[in-house]
Length: 71
Image 1: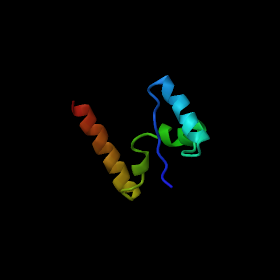
Image 2: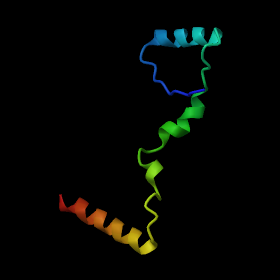
Image 3: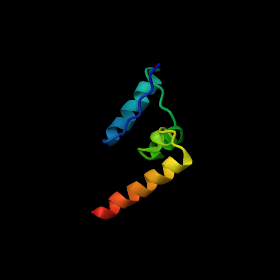
């Protein structure tokens, strides 16, 4: 089974989805189940991915701050 996250752009689509669920073609999941995934920042999945030491992390943060201030 594959799960898709969709955004309804037309009010008529809501009724269509309900009809598909009634026919047991799809299952509509509750909004709360996806809110946690959607509300994550786009970089949340990358946090900690570099596995830097504390010194490397601080150096990286300083460098990032410096280059932001250049512009």
